[in-house]
Image (tube, rainbow, N blue to C red; front, side):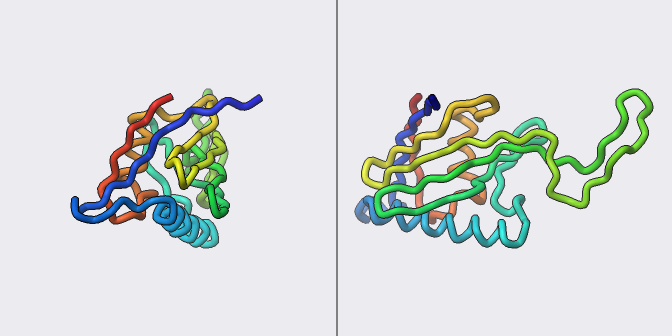
Length: 154
């Protein structure tokens, strides 16, 4: 049985006089993100929606479905392999034409628009809370033009 980590995600308006975005606003943010994800995947350009992690890894949404009440899909952590060399003979064994990985981890997620709770499947390679916060705030995954407060808990 899968277990999940839960995160309380809050998107706050830039202007204190504006109202909170509510469930419709969260749905709009995820709907826009889905369009962006679908566009970049169609172009086979995963880097356009990826957040750079340490140790030559990247983090990106891989698939997304939007319903009236939730968004769900998968997020991928992966490395990018350009060349593979023999460990002992140092001979070039493989040259990538792009988009190849030697390590790939998939995490299922669900976001509840009404409760603004993000659940991400626990698993090997899941980035820390700090890294997830940075990915949400600073990467191209963040398509909302809003100040974002994340109170993440597990």
